[in-house]
Amino acid sequence: MWRELKPIGRHPDSGGYRRFAWSEADIECRAWFRAQAEGRGLAYEVDRNGNQWAWLGDPEAGDAVVTGSHLDSVPDGGAFDGPLGVVSSFAALDELRGRGVEFGKPLAIVNFGDEEGARFGLACVGSRLSAGQLGIEQARRLTDADGISLPQAMERAGYDPTAIGPDPERLARIGAFVELHVEQGRALDLSGDQVGIASAIWPHGRWRFDFRGEANHAGTTRLVDRRDPMLSYAETVLAARREARLAGAVATFGKISVEPNGVNAIPSLVRGWLDSRAADQATLDTVVTGIEKAAREYADAHGVELDIVRESFTPVVEFEHALRDEIARILEGASDCLKVPVLGTGAGHDAGILSGSVPTAMLFVRNPTGVSHSPAEYAAEDDCVAGVIALADVLEGLTRR
Ligand SMILES: [Zn+2]
Image (cartoon, rainbow, N blue to C red):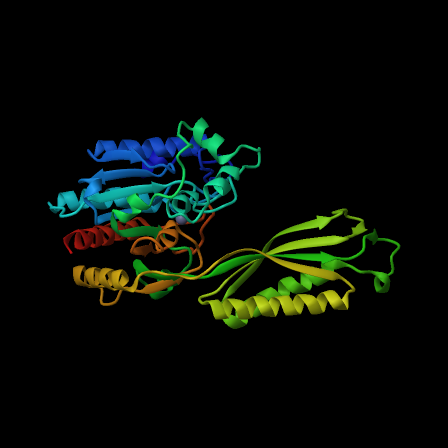
């Protein structure tokens, strides 16, 4: 499976993947998914939001055990974020068939569309639409950098965009959804474990900081006469780092725009975007409040005006404790592992979106570099195999309960 996926959407210079939703590369990934499903005799279907499903057993029977992930990528993403979950799902099914397991419930493998949001700027579009967390009109208005709308992109890819929207009947037929994912951090590497279970997805948000000063000549304006927003911005970046470190959270200014953006001009405007995440809401509030307070002080000190706008916010997602504990028992019973580590994560996932509608859990596979959303993302073959066995054990346990 990896051999077939490897060349799809891979950029020759960076070695990273550019599998944007409904692009040529995404269409190839989708064709691959369909071939994997049909090659195994699974019933293939596409739901109203373009998510792909492969069924073993009757989809209408209810209480289905579902696994899967996504195949799209960020710009120059790694090979594992998403595809590891889909490949492992098919491999786990092969493993269970090899064991001669009788499935007491329907089992499905899913590929959620547009998880990364690299093209239309909103993550998890496929699962959000199905779970009713993205309005139909809002989805229709999403456009990419070339002005192509989501419905146009779906249509060009050969999918019907007219029926997009909530899919409660389909979600009601799912008894449990388990997503396996490459870890996007080094917790498992540090603990020496191959596989872990997710506890929660951290709350996270994005804030826009507009520092307004006065444009002037870089050569003739005395330092004392300047109202330079770049200085207050720079100090705010350092404050973000400090506040996050003190709280055990993360805070990042990863995007900036400058006006007039001239090498010999003091800027009139510096606009920076803060992304911050923490294990719980109170910690996140403390971090962001601390950064805002520092930013206002620095702005005042330089005679700069500051506006702060919260552009998006996603509250904490706690995965269902009963399912998580059941999976821990299955894994601890199936191997000589005494205790499966339970990890929080700062990254969003389809499993997080679905957790409001169905019992949901996640398995993480060790990533020794901790790097993700980059070609350096990595998982060793041994660890991938351990992930497949763990997923197979979990699916087997869940179809028997
Ligand atoms: Zn992912």
